Amino acid sequence: MSAAAPMVELRDLHVRFGRGADGVHAVRGVELTVPAGAAYGLVGESGSGKSTVLRVIAGLIDRFEGRLAVAGEVPGRRRALAFHRAVQMVFQDPYGSLHPRHTVDRIIKEPLAIHRLPRDDARIARALDEVGLDRSFRFRFPHQLSGGQRQRVAIARALVVEPEVVLLDEPTSALDVSIQAEVLNLLTRLRRERDLTYLLVSHDLAVVGHICEEVAIMREGAIVETLAVERLRERTPTHPYTRQLLEAAAGYHPAVARPLVATA
Image (cartoon, rainbow, N blue to C red; front, side):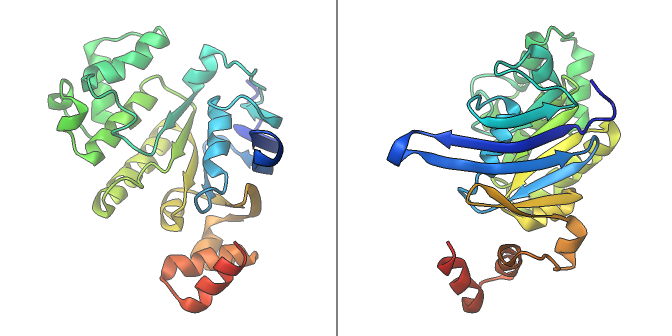
């Protein structure tokens, strides 16, 4: 892998589902560059295409047009095992993403078995400790955990194979507000300690502002603006749609809602 290359690079990405009049052009010419060690956010309302972009990178969608490179290498349509070790994903719903009949121990051991890595007790205990769970959680089932604890297990499962890139698909949206900050602080600490690269998808500007340095705003499958997160905090975007999202995040105002509806 080339050390000088961006960690994740997309050029003119297009994704279409279906054909003809029933087809959907879900992603339209998306271009983005994520440096190694950075946290990059993709923000947009539901249906804007942001999660589709994440699934292309992860290899969950293999029919697309354009160029994808990870650490300077272009993966094939069928991703190699080494790619899936280097690029891991944390999903939105921690309960749905964990097997309900598997213990935490088995959930964390499964990716180790897939990638032929040691499955010793010390490694499992270390993975749990990194996400703030003690050994008493090891043989519990997902239904015995809170939402925040389940998401910590999902993060431990992703990190136990020591990836370089972590794709985060709305990782806190299913959690209570009081727990969201804890999980975001955990993700920030882990990125710093492990020198990880994050690509975070969210509809919540506050979440992106907490964890990311740069953000791309998506609408109807296309990126309409890319800006440093400081400009979000300063409320100085250039695109009207980004300004509308900022106003909407501050609360409902009829004067803001009207242009959002009119341009939808």
